[in-house]
Length: 326
Ligand code: ES4
Ligand code: ZN
Image 1 (tube, rainbow, N blue to C red):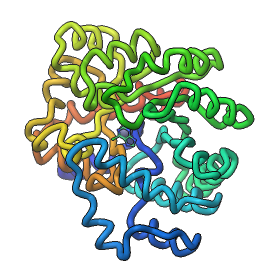
Image 2 (cartoon, rainbow, N blue to C red; image 1 turned 180 degrees about the vertical axis):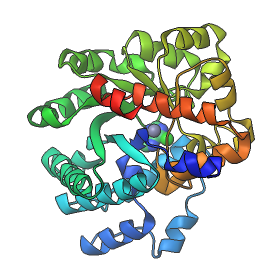
Image 3 (cartoon, rainbow, N blue to C red; image 1 turned 90 degrees about the vertical axis):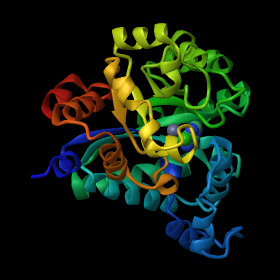
Image 4 (cartoon, helix red, strand yellow; image 1 turned 120 degrees about the horizontal axis):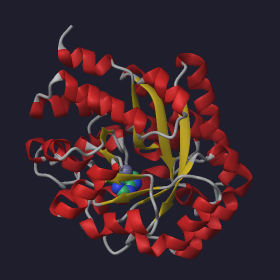
């Protein structure tokens, strides 16, 4: 079997995926119709044509606009099931999936609707493929600390179904330090935490995420290469970085895949995992990310084995389960 085919079928974990970012234009249109939502695009093609981003914010504006079609438990079920079917087809046996409750509660959709719907989709997918799933409740960093605390309160009845907490949305001007107290409260609940850092933001934001938020892993983190001492620290501690190659190219973090810092990160000994971030918007699910990386860098079999081993080691699954998959 060709190496790329083995890479695509190899069991792996996906650790950086926004469920709202898996909303395909076709499903967005179907849900807009089902829910009688006044949607600002008149065709799937015109929506797809808007997928032309110059930076993170230009993407987020569209991502939040499209999320407005998600209204009912059934919608969140359908969204989750569609993603998990695509993931399973790419060899994903375990997924740790972020959701942004504030995007929904701000529109009057309840926390229970969101979480129950996502859990129903997970249950359907588990019956179909056996895929294992955990949920990461992610706070929107462009909103206030107070809003994050209110969201944590709303999540209280559902904490048995929240494996971890995260931090996403507009990075520049919203450093991790803004959420130091919120993340302390999350850790005090006994949950691990993660944060987007060093996607567009400077290495200093990665250092804040490590020191102030005490994250278990860094989402993106690709700008760490600008700070030698930070790279040494990340390598020594094997703190995982959930890298999303197509996302970085689509959001112009790198001009083209050949300029991605992924090879430098691997050469430095970092614990890198590969992920799809917002696959409906960035040109594909995990398999497409792996194809694009292989086309650019032609990694050998041991490098791929290392990346997939990292995906399980960096996950929140039990040691026994890790032993079975690794
Ligand atoms: C995101 Cl690519 C990215 N960065 C930060 N926040 C996000 N939310 C959804 N996708
Ligand atoms: Zn992300």
